[in-house]
Image 1 (tube, rainbow, N blue to C red):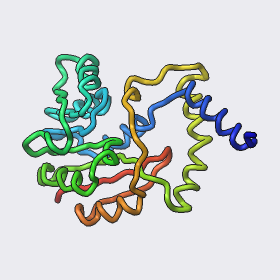
Image 2 (cartoon, one colour):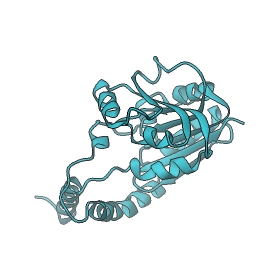
Image 3 (cartoon, helix red, strand yellow):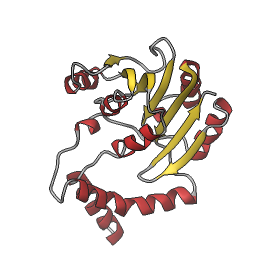
Image 4 (tube, helix red, strand yellow):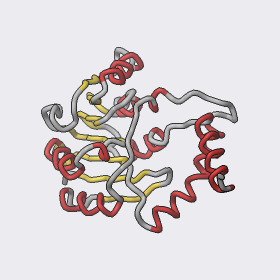
Length: 218
């Protein structure tokens, strides 16, 4: 027999499924605010349908978006105006990382799919002097604060879905068509690894089951 709490959670899950919204895109404006007003080259790792890459192109001379899913990179190209200084490449983030250095590297909801310390070291090697790395990540809830933040986020998540869809049932956004897997590392795990690889990195837990990492290659 199901409990009232279980039934409530099922109802909330059904509500969220009919009023979906993109938690990652919610932070795109914040990501851009961490960057210079103008910069040369940018790399978006795990670009998905290209929403963030197109936003970066408003400030960058050139933007490259990479994703391991050929279907989603094809969709990103379809959604991007021909005149935009953006290219999309199907590539593995670790074994086929684009050569060269970049003034900006962004990585949204991808780090938990990779060996995080190895990936962060790779980003550091390809970040130009003076460049900025911004990561929006997903971590496993492990501490009392994590669970408290999740409890706060759950009703806010439903309210955001309702407001963004103006109370109407809506399909999943194109940017949410790719699958993801649960994070295995906790936020404290990420903090330890990041500070070992990126001295001075700033990390912070965020609402809606995310954290942010900002590092400048001074």
